Amino acid sequence: MSDKAVQEKKAEKIDFGSDQDVRWCPGCGDYAILAQMKRVLPDLGIPREKTVFISGIGCSSRFPYYLNTYGFHTIHGRAPTLATGIKLANPDLSVWLITGDGDGLSIGGNHLMHLFRRNLNINVVLFNNQIYGLTKGQFSPTSPVGKVTKSTPYGSLSNPFNPVTMAISASASFVARTIDRDTKHMAEIFRRAVEHTGCSFVEVYQNCNIFNDGIYKHLTDSETKLDNVLYLEDGQPLIYGKEKDKGLQLNGFNFEKKEIQSENDVSGLHVHDENDPNPGYAFLLSKLSDTKGFPAPVGVFRKVESTPYEIKFHDQIRMVTEQKGKGDLKKLFLTSDTWKVE
Image (cartoon, rainbow, N blue to C red):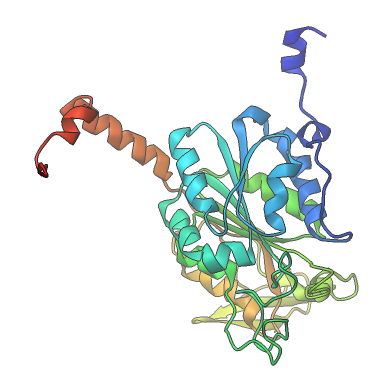
C-alpha cells in the first residue's frame, strides 16, 4: 500500500488500541467506557498524533496506557494543570482529561474548578463510582451520607459532591452525564462533547463491582431503569417512565411530578433547553439525582457558546507583541527592581 493510501485510510477502533494489557478488575465499568471511547475516536477524523489523554491517579487514570495516542499519567489531582499547559502550548491538539470522583473532586477539586471557569477547549470525563477503588474501598467525595467503608466504619458524615452541579456552578460550557452500561448513549455523549468548542464535562456513572457493586442498579436494571432515568432531549418535555407516563413541571424553584394520562397530556411539562444561557435551570435539573423519589437525569444538561481560554490567551499575546514588540528575556532580567548582594 502506498504512503498516500495509508494516509487516506480511515482509522478504525483497533487503531486506537495500544499494546498494553488492560488491567482492571473483571466486570469493571471502566471496560465499557474504554470500548466506547475507542469506538468514537475514529469517527472524529482527528489523527492519533493530534490526540492526547491526560490522567491523574486512580483506576480511571490508567486510561492513557490503553490508547494508541499521546498521553500523560500525571500525579494525584493535577491532571487539569498538565492539560491546561498542553492546550496553551499547542491549541491544535485534541485534549482529553480522564479522572475519577476521588482524583477529580478531592485533591483535584480546586484544579478542576478553575479549568471549567477558564473554559479551555478540553474534554473532561469523570468516572463516578462513589468509592476509592485503587486504594481498596475508602469513601470518596461522592459517597452518600451513611456509607460504610474501610475509612468510615460507622458511616460517612460528609455531604456528597454532585459532580454535575459543581461543573455547572463553575461555569463549564458543556455539561453532560451518562451511564457505563448504556453504551450507545455514552458514545453519543462523547461525540457531542468533543464537537463542542469550549470545556466539556461528562460524568459517567460507573460501577465498581469489587468495592461498591450495584450502586446504580436501579438505573441499569431492565425492570427499573426507565422509571428511574430521565433522558434529556433538547426541545422535548421532561418525560420518563416505562410507559412514558411520568413528567416533570417546574413550579418556581422546584420540580414537581405529573402523571401523564395520554400522549397529548403534556401541557405544563417543562421543555428541556440545553442552550439556556442562564445556568439556573441546569443547576436545578442537576439536583434531581439527589432528590428522593425523582429520576436521575442523563444527557446534556447545558451547552452554551463561549470563547475558549486558549484563543483569548494567544490573542492577548499577539496584541501585546504588536504594541510593545517582541520581548527580550535578558533585558527583562536586568530591568528595574534588581539589586546586587555583596
